[in-house]
Image (tube, rainbow over all chains, first blue to last red):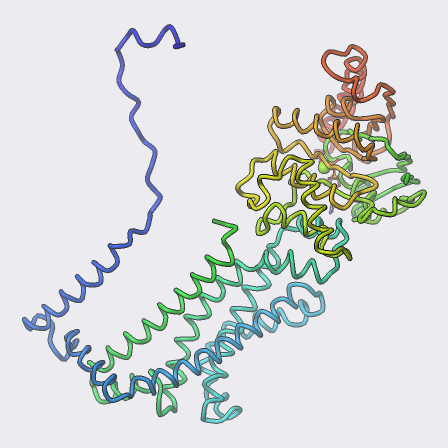
Length: 271
Length: 256
Ligand SMILES: Nc1ncnc2c1ncn2[C@@H]1O[C@H](COP(=O)(O)OP(=O)(O)OP(=O)(O)O)[C@@H](O)[C@H]1O
Ligand SMILES: [Mg+2]
């Protein structure tokens, strides 16, 4: 059946389309193309002298420096030293942060006692405290790990209790109405509800960890990507400097990728 | 098990919300609570289930709940209150996990309630994959799984479209025919109240007092289609409610 008034006349024009858009979708091939194009342009600029060798070394030179690093085996020594500090500091900072954030999120005493303290210490650049850390924890690994630990601890605390504060009170009341124990409510309702916020906090703290790693290694370290960059800088070896920075960027990308995988796995219910 | 509300009065800071509520909820009876918006119906229901303490007065439990009952006073919420990170069976299982049940027992209960609410095919679906009516059926399945002595429902159907509401209403009636559950049912919808209630409590505007209690003797199974007796009751309830709502509006005007 069709509406009698339509179909016969063919006067009028179609309604202009005004919807769509505002929905950027990632296209997989674009990113590599942008990267390759940029590096190719850079290489071309260096070869033709358009970019002076003092201003920026050619990508091929940086790559040579990287191969050199690889062949001498120094790469692994630097990487191992850095990753160890990074993982140790980030892991313990995040873990402690989640614990303290949960306490602040759940208990009035912890909230009134610790929240002002966290707000007061969070904005202090931890790099400024590095000399103190060296006095407290020694010039060796201790102070470096401590810097990263402190730097990642505070954002994690804030992300965690913020996430807990945002858990739907209705769900908690539902848990109580079914007579769930306090522990069950925390484990099965509050923590899963805060997990999205905790994971996005982890993303931020991972970036902070890398920044602080380099800062800490620049003070006193024999090995480590930061130390490598520092030495390259003081020798004006810009090719090595670029190599070091690229390695840091890769570490950051890998971290982000791992956290992205974790989000996909733990938050698959969101989709 | 019966419930008895004695002199329930409640205030939030200076605002008196409920005043001297006395009410009996007898076993096997569905008590509907209606009243203008903001008169304290939800608050009253939270007190019946022990989620909130009245300023004065008490809710008494008379007699023991059946021995196999896991959670005597069980809610069904307006917004379903399902955990989005758990599947259908996970949400039902949540209510059972804190009780000492063997894994096979738990599995049996879950399978049974999901079959009764026609959700067996959706065991592993997440809430976001379900329609509103199905979500509320999951919440009903979860409530049934703990074999409640009294069901406490706060506008369980008002987040749903009218067709789904009709269907779920039939489900609630069928279920009552089979199991004779006891319930306190808060609603805005007078048609729901006369369809389901053995006893309809009309609350006044805030502070909520009992304006009237209407008992309907007609069996639930007979309350279908056109029914002049029910219609006249519904009309009477509407007159009561309308006067309260008007008076409440006028008070708001005066307060300005
Ligand atoms: N936690 C609270 N703190 C302070 N006031 C509250 C609180 N909960 C409810 N109230 C007030 O108590 C009154 C009754 O609220 P309640 O939610 O019980 O009403 P209701 O009858 O369920 O209304 P509705 O029909 O709109 O659901 C309202 O005026 C509300 O503002
Ligand atoms: Mg309400």
